[in-house]
Image 1: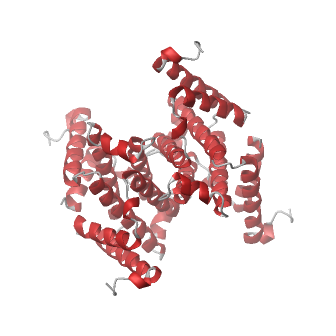
Image 2: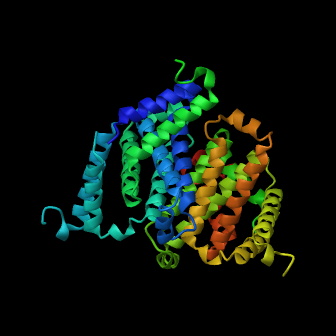
Image 3: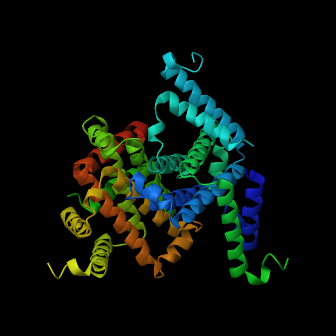
Length: 113
Length: 113
Length: 113
Length: 113
């Protein structure tokens, strides 16, 4: 699994060569994330789920994968710029999701299984 | 760095308990990504960059981190559902970004440095 | 049908009272549009179409209507800030859509009917 | 100002010719809105406000106007599909915004001016 620091090194290398570093502010990165997610949505819109799976068997699959890669790069960069430790953020979020399950679904909660 | 399979295990555990598994289709996950990215945008909108950094020193930082974690979880899940190998997708994308740099910025390209 | 100038008058009145006028830049308004559209998406996500129509028979219908109103207000304001005449923009777009139809669907085009 | 029914007539005419009518469900239209708003964001991302105003003096202005028109068309269509009266939605929203101002800004509220 690719390490965050590899992603960041490649991202920052291109940014440096192009002189884009000052553009990578939280707000711009959040906007870029939103644009990339919508580019992904563009591949899927107007299609039902079976048509999406069919699309993934065509050469468009590479374009969809490229959108996911873009989202991952901007997300990883944004976390660094905001000084967020994604491991902690993920563990906290996963713990919260579990807690909510235990509260809202007590009879089939995690401890009872 | 948290492994994709840990993220997926936690995500799927909650989905199973809640009976949400059939909802995790590509289109729904893409829509969820778009909603989470906008929730992030909600923290930043109307603020300039210095106000965003100030926000990150308040208790809102945890909420922002939780949005990033949500985005990561949906992204990781979507890649699995679409059968996309994120490592390959990232390497391909990074190679493409480098190639574009070399074409568009030949005099300061990667080989010359 | 509500006039654009009524929408703008109400929007600007609140903006003035709150001192928000300087915030209504193109980029901030575009981000606000994206946030409002995602708030709308939040009402619909994980639901199928019949569940969405069922939702519109509950008290949530008012919340959905409020999101649409927000989108309309930000869109109308953004057009003014960018000095775009929406009537011209709409007529141009509609003409383009028709033209594309005639090119792509010649045998069942507009003239032949 | 263009009437909603003109927008809808043109939208539905193209949809009918292309056989797209069954695609215009609430969820698909909400997703289309989100894609169009992001296409707009794509014109603005990485730019500061002065660069955006400069962009609007180039031939890109027509492309930005076309995005706004697309957003307006999908919004108007979505309102109809959801059976939302946009005039009522706008009046309700504007009244709510005013009410909030009066509560949050009592000393400079609407009655005192």
